[in-house]
Length: 316
Figure 1 (cartoon, helix red, strand yellow):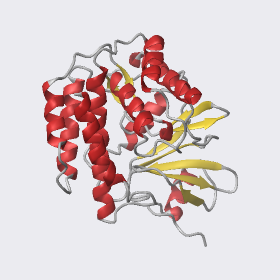
Figure 2 (cartoon, helix red, strand yellow; figure 1 turned 180 degrees about the horizontal axis):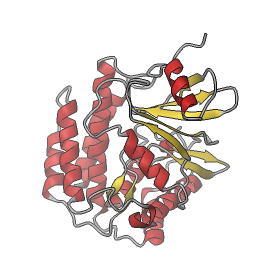
Figure 3 (cartoon, one colour; figure 1 turned 30 degrees about the vertical axis):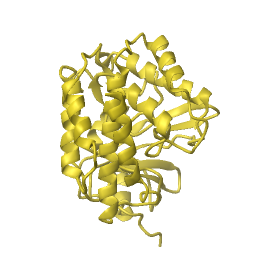
Figure 4 (cartoon, one colour; figure 1 turned 60 degrees about the vertical axis):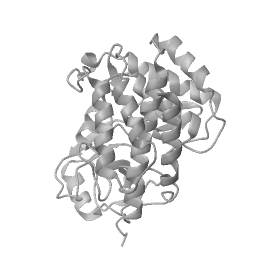
């Protein structure tokens, strides 16, 4: 008998997916390791392979890990110039596997080391995402662009307060600087919220899928750009295998040339990205110290928090 992976009751899942016409008979599943948030499983029946995604075990912050939100944006981008897996089913009943979940296509690809060419490919995909009119894909009400940056700053402060497990020097000072120096936003766009190599699949040097849309919304796209650039620079929090770090300024210039966006206040956005990643890393560290994480690679995440805070203070 195949054992259930953490967080997935295969008997109940098989019954549910068979009723939905997605699978037949018993299922096997394996947890895709390496992620730090929602849990992703490759699920197989006798005929094929699907992917199931659910929230993490324990310590779920308010508004985070929203399966319906992820499912909606990926479904909306199905025919857009941004590669996403096809979505098949959303189950919001926690009685099936213990939490809401959704089912999507299994896409071929892997997560290779970063190269300059791949970094430019990623920047182009990000610019393509930001070029989509949210109204044109049914996402006109997906976010509230007015006051977006102010809400981002306050939101991540609330997340920090909900996740505090220790004193982190400079964390509150970084928040105060960000709150006092919020720049005006340009035209709003669909924002991924955590765009990086580690949240994509790659085959033959091309992006085959952009994954992990749990933080997506409609807002200021430069928050996406700054986070992407920061990931490339510091390699924090599952950005993929080590490789050839991209040039920060060259990538920013490439994005600007493709998108036409004004990057004159990019430093503030990088500071916000540092704050956001520091809060996320601290939350992961707290879950790890409480024994609520699944998989490997969590022990060192807490060490990244102070480095990110220092980097943010240099920018803002």
